[in-house]
Length: 297
Image (cartoon, helix red, strand yellow):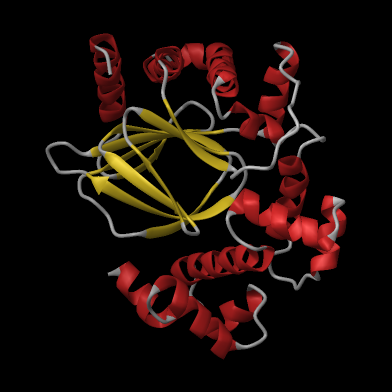
């Protein structure tokens, strides 16, 4: 980074430190903007990334999408263009120099508005790509992020200016080398858009069984073409995607409700509690009861 970029980065660090009391995820007064702070590195954590723009402001982080690793630091930003089940790990953090990050959740309607306002709807015919990417952060994009973050100290300006700065952030990302991935989720002629429709269907109905033909019909593709494109976009098959969503929801229910593993297994769509326990252990490293006891401790 240049000297001016380091200065900008330091300003962003100070904003997040002021707004983040203690470790954890902190919702800000700006809709869809979250700050993260951690004083130590972490083990691998399972979660679901919503469509979002993410930055590491201090420290470093790794995100695994199936077998694909995305590593990013303050020189980069990460974008998830659809809901994606991932493993994340903070790899650089200490009590003196904690990990600091931000996440700005984004919607298809916001992306489409930017495309229409700036006439960016041209979409080249190309093979579908992963719905997640890491890119180098340019100075102009960092400027827009800082302007958005500064609004934390000027809450009266948030209703008017936050949408404008969010629009600028999206504009800069869309103009970047991976912009077509973000553009693709809202343009009907793109493969990513067709796969996004299926992803939303699975998320809304994760607890029921699907026939691959049913999902292919939603995407308006042949079965073989759908299966190939789904894996190109998400790095996993439709069945693997649904399984990860089921197991992550099961873990959330076990953590937040007074219920047992058998009941949760049926609630998330499993017909066999034995199969549920086996697949839960394979994904999280421990059987359900032991895993939840460990997490609560």
